[in-house]
Image 1 (cartoon, rainbow, N blue to C red):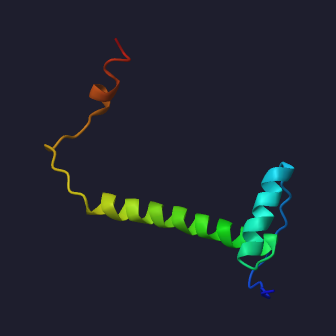
Image 2: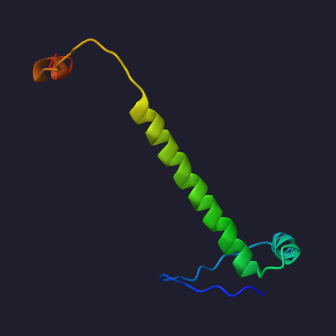
Length: 85
């Protein structure tokens, strides 16, 4: 069994799962010689990291994109002209 040392505040979470799902998760954890808790913690940590990486990559691509558009300055009157009709 692996020992996990927490370096930050941790919170407990309670979830409800159908028995077949729970047994399937336990089997996956056993196959990797981990407790269900450790296996789920690792799985969820990977998911958060992947999600974070996706957002960072999107922002990097968006920042690098160049868009050319004609110079245009909005005026208050033009912006609200349709509402004032």
